Image 1 (cartoon, rainbow, N blue to C red):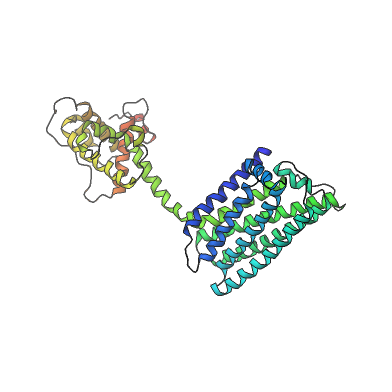
Image 2: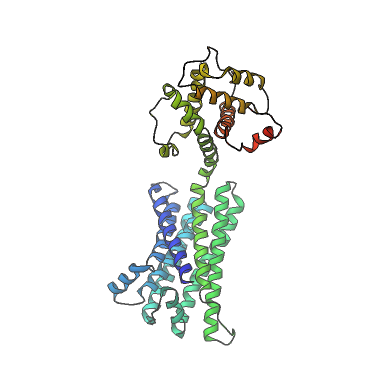
Length: 404
């Protein structure tokens, strides 16, 4: 369980810091900068709340302040600040700028006063029990004074998250943008989990100090709920920025798949007719990773394959040409084209066997996607031709006793 806790803590810490680094450069002095500044503040203090409780940084802070539980107040103060920042962000999203400014000011004053009281109470109580990160608070809750202090802290969190849930639900209902709406639903869901975390903590306090509840819940339960809620909120606040970019991922993956599937045919043709290649051949491994201009490189493969077909035409077996002519418009025409290219490549080291031209399958008005599809079928047949098994789309032809 400790490993799960550490994993979730690192995930929240890294995600928060990454979100801050991603958003902060976009800050500009505009009318919308207040909302973005508040959001960056939320990300920053969310990162602080997790990083100060991880590994060597926690130990160094304890040594620097000469107080074992200094990270408790740092974490809890950060949570109050990020709660206020989140409220300000939502206020600026929901309300017109003039109204939002007044509402944001009230949020800042209210949470600022709550934070001042929290720090005062902490200095008065100064909890002394020390253990691991996940157990220190649990041990100190056994003290009545700290239980009262913790109840006050949880009340601040609960009020802020309750407002976030209400505002997020309202805003999600009014917007049409898919990604922003999804983000608000995720923020509301994450805030709901934080409310559950507060409820579990209160349950824990009541179980320790009253007879109302017989036993406390599993002591690691609240950490799991809080961390998952935090990750869900981070996802919700950032997805409006990177979510729309996912729309461009599908065509890129389609082009990359076609680029790879044309590879065997392209390499064979350009090796036999190197004059068709516009650039020197790269290493085989590097060829799998087109770092940029994927669409251009895919188009080049199509052109170079077609050019290579014309150059190798004189080396093709006349019987293979005849069979291809007979296979025109047939289901497995690609298989016969691949067989023809095989015969041409096998004769590349000899003299031309005839002066004929390779039958031109390319239509004058063919689109690039259709041409890529045709060449992909040829490349697939070319790759498997001569092996003991054929591609699934071509296997039925062998079963009928027809061979290329």
